[in-house]
Image (cartoon, rainbow, N blue to C red):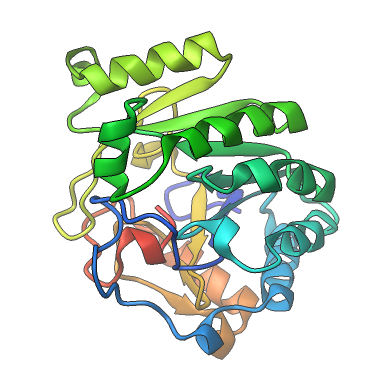
Length: 270
């Protein structure tokens, strides 16, 4: 699929839940986050159908996100259902890895191919502060399990305060980079984003944030097809139908992101 700016759109990010077992400062409010009703969240059958239609239209890459996708009950079954869709070439997931030690091997057997892991520091104390209580040892165990399961290359997403030029100035970024080198992981540095002010930058070591190269659409966990992370535009697959919603999102995809006042990171998938 080509959008109005001749960008090839072949990548769909699917948020499978807005729940998370961590409360990272930049992602989810500490208390009383605005969460969806369970009955509003897409079923596994609906998600599989979206993937089937998307693949028929030219999507060949799908990434599952959250919230935290591993808190979605029976997530391995969903991965298996998606992996069965003919024509899908790349099935990946982004996770905080705290539950990955238990899920890595079952996910790989179900058809998951690759995994990205969010990790902003390797300091246990700072990790607890950033995540409001998380245990970094669970993340390390999850990374080891992902490698053992063959979910490679394992990529690490590290949020930094400024742009790529500031990586060398941030001790946590340097320590994450060192940990990745020592453990055969690929690291990407993501400038801290703010949906409501339109603050974002190009990912160092990846293509995210580069609007000229954007190749993705996004599906929220309650069925809204979004053309851009930094946009309030959304098209309901339940009321419009999957293909119509995707076509409208493709047509409405902006040349460049602006602001998103309708979502938070935990309910759009980042």
